[in-house]
Length: 398
Image (cartoon, rainbow, N blue to C red; front, side):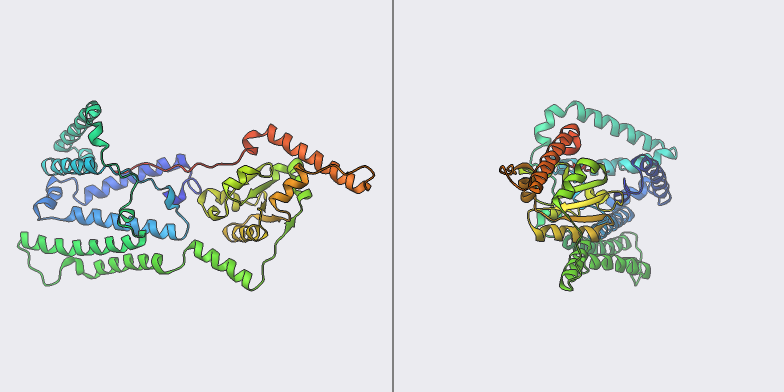
């Protein structure tokens, strides 16, 4: 439910949906025969590879969905949690789990499924699993050095192989197809089954495989969300259709002091430039990170006016164009740069004696506005401080 929570489905309601999905998942497992130890250990004895095909199908389906959602900006791939890889302990743990799979005839998930329909061997398996977890927990201080050895960090296989996610996706899909065909021949030989056409090459299987490779081809060759927005911006610039609504520094200062709750002042410079100086009450939304999911609530809302600024006229206009294509908010650009705003309000010199009246009026207005903005920042420190949104990675797995 990654792209739906919390934007469409609340985090609380997602737990209810997760419960219903868990019940449905258990029901499907039982109906598929996964509550039977014969079905599960058939993978190791070569007479039934249903488990391999089901898990491979689930994996490549999820992979294709994740890549497609990420390609069109519906899922932020950067916040997907990847378990750290401890190679040595992973190899040993995998061997232990495989042995337990063969001896007990269950994996942790299928054992719960079988226990739910009253199978005593599954309940015994679960008891043994809990006992094993307890023993491991109690002996962890003795095993910690071995467990944490060969730490490779949060690494994906594609990163390890030095290739893109989509390249690895094609390889994994091809491996899945070959595994389906190979296991069909192995099953046929072990079970003395004769057939002229391998079952995996039947019409419905070819159709499913075709859909998978079409999805991967879409991700690989068709423009994604970022590419579409960049092309729209380039087309608008080429046809000179760019119309920007500007706001002066004096107007912005007045809005900050009197109507700060109705505007979002957005700094699209780098965090380092933002830390050196930023307009009071500003939000730091670096230009190259504007498409991150964390900013959607600001760029898609219609309750406040967004005012963008930077140190470059080109950069702020590009940011405003990008915001127009990302969301539906009311967008303006600051006529002056960040440096000019700082000079006008926080570094201005008083007019010399005898200066025209309007110069004194401008100076007094800007001095009072600067004091008002600083007072507002002091009163609302949590809002006035640089806005830093932390990305939380959801941890989970089998």
